[in-house]
Image (cartoon, rainbow, N blue to C red; front, side, top):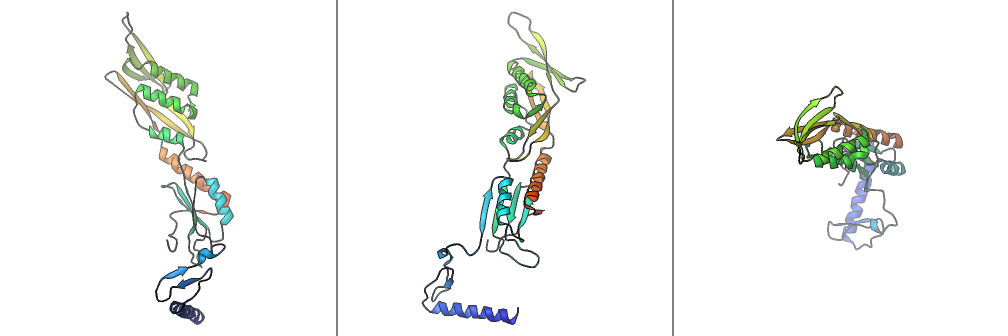
Length: 273
């Protein structure tokens, strides 16, 4: 510490000690010790504006985060990404190599999953009844690319119409599709046999996070026949990787829009936090 800085600090301490002993009318912007006590009183709230920017704003999409950062950024601004928590934090007044900083002026963004993603991920690897599966396909038809929506809706209607049949077996066709065989009791007759052809894979197109780009993800059919009852569902192909890629894509978008590198990690705790 230089002699000049020591002298300045000593003067400040002496002045505070003096103010602590004498009555003093606080002025806007001053920080004072109450006479005869160790309690500090900050008169910043009497100023027209705060001494400096601080606080954290929570935003809901990448475009909003970029707009905020571009309005407030300085040479000390850093952006951090937590891929596991789907979260980005911009620290406007962050520390740099030569200088410390308060690091308490921030903007946060926690990516929010779309309703479409939650619907499909929520039933991932879950076997459903025919009726439940049919309703799920009807609700998610807009996200289905292959087979086309019309074919999938027809399949859903078929499952709804065959809830009372006795499923016997399944076989794999040369095309890779599955053929489910059933027996159906028909009044005044000996009944009849039938088949339902099910695609082995559904191709979906949906955005994992709000404001994000749509991406392709495959859903592989799963089913089980037991006691004549059919349980059917699907398994998404590496959904965790789809989420990670969506976070990486958002990081690229933020970097390009703000011209600030996105660091993979956790931001520092702000001084005084």
